[in-house]
Image (cartoon, rainbow, N blue to C red; front, side, top):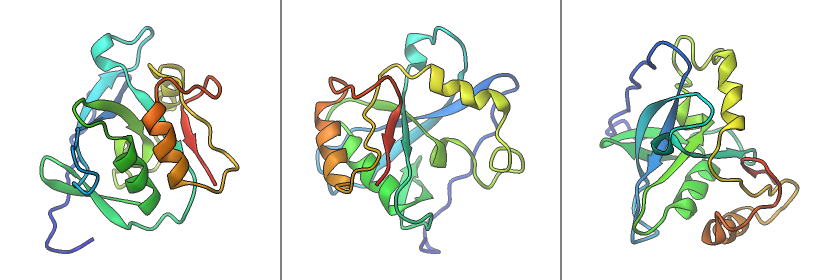
Length: 165
């Protein structure tokens, strides 16, 4: 990350069963920087409609920070594959709410990044949309773009959006 970029500072989560979700802001142009807002939501079943989200999980590429997404004008370092996925998952005119572990969990935090609370696994029970499992596929970004264009109509199996090579 360029030292001239400001780093995002995470707000602590409220006490109780809260997780962060991100509101992926729309963009007309694919080249536009990825902008988002982070907010805390209570883990409960059923989820309140304003707290509904899609889960994105991916495992491909290295864990090296390769780019930035922006929250309130402050940069958050992400891997190249996370940046690609978020770029293609953006909508043109509508916010998309996601849970992305690399962003929604404060990886550098004294407790969150070391050992997230046990109830964070409950997030997998509550995504509002089912996703696409791209496990074992080599096409990576092309499949992300195709899945994003058709989501949420595409349902490969009842699981969060999972991206793996």
